[in-house]
Image (tube, rainbow, N blue to C red; front, side, top):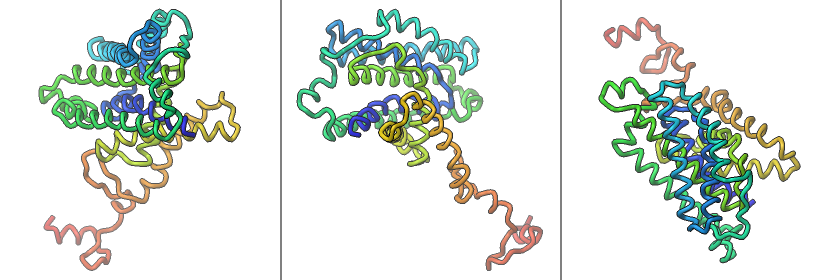
Length: 323
């Protein structure tokens, strides 16, 4: 179970990237399936070449930045649909990743990685390792919260909320879109480099279906913790990645066929999307994106009430307000 928590914390870096595009920019980006492997391939190749593991991880993140920027350019400057732009970049990255890696699988079993000091100190696989990794990811999450509170970050949030309005105020939505996609895929690629070093190998197929894992992490976490504030939504993305890994661990522990993991992930996403709508949102007031509390449909349709709480006709209520 500790190993599942460790891996979930590492995948929290990927969840931060998916959060930026899926929630902040309101952009369904499929580039992550390819950029994750790109980060893993670049990081593993540099580690095998004797480079510093930290530098290899940063190089993997840089490759992800380029991949995300290409998707953004295809969408903004090329006028290609956002979903199709991500698919095109993802398909191209399959061949590029093979070129980077040279073969379908790169083993790192005898190489020094970022996790070698933890392993030599007998911390890997313990709660001490979980605490260290969680602290690093939380610092990264705090940086995301700070960035989104800057003028540029607010412009990015506004681009996701209402692009035409932001353009009318003189903000370049092309720039904010390209930047957000680049940052998102940079996080995803950095996570790929970390996962490759943690697991001891990089594989050409390790990013397949990753977008579903990212969506499951973000949606599960925000279903548990909510997303009314930026820090709350960022923390929820990281927590959701851990929860997702624990659910998969529990499913495998009870004897589930590993081939069914993707189906379980899809079911988790569907449940996380539908259960709040069927239950919580029907009984509690909803908080709109503007921050205004909206009454549930039943309350909005109820007759007006006087000051004593007795229902009165709607016309009489209008008269009292001077309408």
